Length: 497
Picture 1 (cartoon, rainbow, N blue to C red):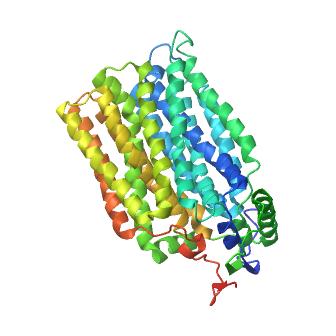
Picture 2 (cartoon, rainbow, N blue to C red):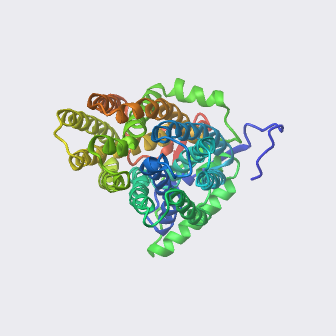
């Protein structure tokens, strides 16, 4: 489809179509085709984790004399981190709107290209303003990724596996974090690389990984769900039919017939007014839930966790070149959580798992703050506590993206992800680093304890909201959870024999 010009009128509807595409996708068994989706779309979180972790771990080195950049550690972890998140919020809204309008595939290629270019230019920074500008633009690209990728994942993965796959893919961010933490150790070793070269190579290696992902992603298809709503029903039918043939050859047996059809009015776009009305007037309880989950996890991660290196160097005199070892441990806890607990979101259920992961992580962080205040923790002890906290917190944070991507109608999906990500992250991810950078680097124990307690309180509050408002979306079709706005009336579905 050719994108219409901004001046050309766009028809609201292009016809009425009855399709079984959603049911056909949901009844597919797990296959090589689904692994291709996971690898093509999920690996970008590894890149994001690599990027953010490198910045956190090399902050001390960039701030040292001889780095080639006249910047302070607080500017890297505070101002630059806030700009990165501000860029991510802006990019999520901008690219989220384009994703719902022009398709998932087109935008997840564009956003990755923006991300790669900005990361490469960050490595070339010689002035503070240059570093700040391209940290913002790097975030701009990754914010678009959040909207485009999560939309595509949930629309392509069968309902039986959607929860665990979404959580594990979002949790794979921490595989990149482990790599970034360990990579920073090598890159900060002045016996291997000069002070003004190692940190730059860290960013450059991320670009190389991103180029590989870009090549793999070329083979990921457009979402058939997006296609049939946006007047490309024939393309959706052909794509799903080809996938079915491929899976039948792989499994050696025919697929069962789809159980349902849905009749919808096709349209080219949905206006901002209709999106806002849908999200806040039609689903106000879900809007409160989404905002609570995003604010809680954004404060915990953007405000506190990414200042972990500063806490180690300030309170435990850990050399800047060694903080990567500690961060690799807590990053492992972050990844193992969604990996081990993800399946329970599809079996035990969303409500129980979302609320329990948020509440447990918050309560455990309160306990960590108490032990830290008493002086009972060494650097290793604090790392162990954080590892346990983040085992649950990472699972909860990933479920925030899962929740928003499945509880609102398909026409608004990418924009809803973008909006709640931007609003929640702006609250916790922009203000958080600016507030907590000073608290965690002040050298005053009470200040860091306060930072821990604020993060813990917000996670507990979000967990309590989930107890009452979380949606039991496990093993249900996206169209059952939130009826498409384009569904024909009065009949929305007919059951096939």
